Every structure is written in structure tokens, then in C-alpha cells.
Image 1 (cartoon, one colour):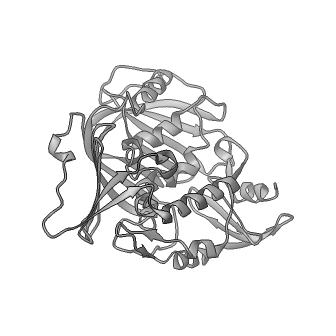
Image 2: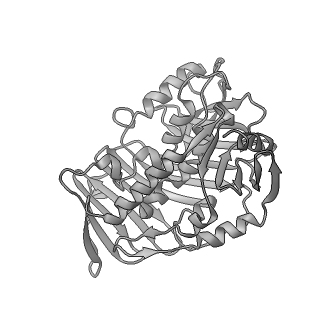
Length: 381
């Protein structure tokens, strides 16, 4: 399937996954009340409430709203493509509109300066609409297709909202995180509890993570990640407007506009996607991690030419280079620092939240850790 086309939907969460995937919730203290007034609950109670509210099958209530993702990671100026590409999502602010009526009734729209893309799921009908090229694609699933392997291009509602990120952040109860409840807040016009997660390991670049839970439904409304020494969040995703009522049925119906190019794709017939899935599986097999908790570092095989070959497939089956990944890499590497040690040599890139090391022997190490921690991880093979 057109995995490249749809990868953009998961980028806001993926950008935080390096941080969120290594986290757990630890000791809890009693809740702190404040304006707006909400019933007092302990952090432990709120952790349980949030876990229930982020259960996709049973926990997420019907809802609609607008989600804004903002990234200020301290990267060099990135090329702007005028589209909702993964490159653009690494900096600035971006909006996603969501309608969720249940696991089989989902609509996600991502407007950009020049166009809008939509994924509409209504029962067994799936449409992808791109106003930029005036193309509507109807997706069918071939009988016997391993859907899990292909991954349908239908974003989980939690992938497009703070729910997924919050679920990852709040999962478990580990010793490396302190959890507390601070004063209540207003998010998207709704009263919310605020959980604050603080890493205990000084090698982490994360100062704290704030999770706002709706005071009525306990659905996460906002997640903010603060880097050490920063007064403003380096990354955040949250609702700017939300309504917890079933969306109108017409939000899940789609008729291609007059003059639109209409095509069909069958999941299971796409040879290019088969090759992409195989490549992704090979990459996953080569991935390993060093350390645990907040200081976990991901290590995977990587060479600069791998990025320059990156492409995305469009709904018409054609390949489009989009923003030049090679140019992006060159731009980022201009700010890199040459480093070396007993492990070898390479180039170090440090942002507010993430440190990356591209070694000359073909490895990429990434983690929300200090440069000292990541070079130490490079010596573990």
C-alpha cells in the first residue's frame, strides 16, 4: 500500500517516540487542585483513568476537533515544500482535523497552505482524497491479504491525537520517572488535570513532560515535552478545539467531486509496497537499543545514501521525490560536530531534545540523551 503517502499521518507522534518509548511512570503523590475546580484525584488514580481513556476499542468516546502539533527542536532551517511532508512536520506548527465516531468511522484531514488531504473510513469503505492533484482513491482489501503486514493507510484516531503519545508516556510503573499532579489547566476550553513526568536520570535531555487529561472524560487533551533549560515546550501536540459528541454521519460519507480523477487500489496487489514492507522488516531486524528508560538509545544501520534514495509513492502509483532528503541531510550535517573515540569516528547532531550520531562505520544512534551518553552507547556493539 502507499505507505510513503500515509507516513505523514504518524509523524507528529513518531517525532516523540524516541522520547516516549523509553518512559514509565514511577512514584506518585497526591493531586493538587486549583482553578478550574475539579474533584481531587491522586496521580495514581489519574494514571488509571488515562489508561482506560486511551483504550482504542472501549475507551475513546465519539469526538471531533482540531489538533495542533508544534515542534521547536532547534534544527537548522528546513526546506519548505508547501505540503504536509514529514520534513515540514519537523518544525513549525501544523493542524490536523479529526472526526471519530468509532473504530470503523474515522475521518482525518490535514490542510496545508495550498491543498488538503483526507482519509475517510466508513465501515468497509476507505477513501483517500488529495485536493492538490484532484485525485480520489478508493481502497479495497484483497481477500487473504495480511493486513497487519501491509498496515492499512487508515490512521488510528489515537495516532492523530495526544491519546497515543500519552498512552506511551503513562504506560507501566518504573523507577526512572517521578510523577506528580500540578494545578489544573484549561485546554481547548475544557477543564483539565495536569500530570507532570520528570526523569530521574541526569543523562536525559528531557526536563519534564506535561500531560493534560480532560476533567470529565480523562481523555488526554495535550502533551508537552520540555527540554532542559527551556521555558517553552520543544514539542507539543494537543487539541485547540474538541467536542465529545458523536460527529454527524455526513462527515464519514465521501463522493468524489466533479472532475476529480477517481482510481481504485487493492491492498495486496501493490508490488512496490511489498518491497517497501520487506525493506522495513530488514531495517527493523537491524535495529537494536542500548540502555533503558529515559536514556535508551536506538541503534540502526544507516548510510547517507540511504536517505538520498528515500521516495514516496503517490495515489496514482507514480514515485515522487518531494522535498530532497539529500539536501535535508546536507543542511543538517552543516551543524554537525566531528567526534571520535575508541568506537571510531562520526558526526554528532544535537537538538534540544534529541542527540544523533552518524558513525563512519554505517550506524545511526538516536536518543533523548546527552552527547556523552550517545558516544558511550556507540562503544557498545
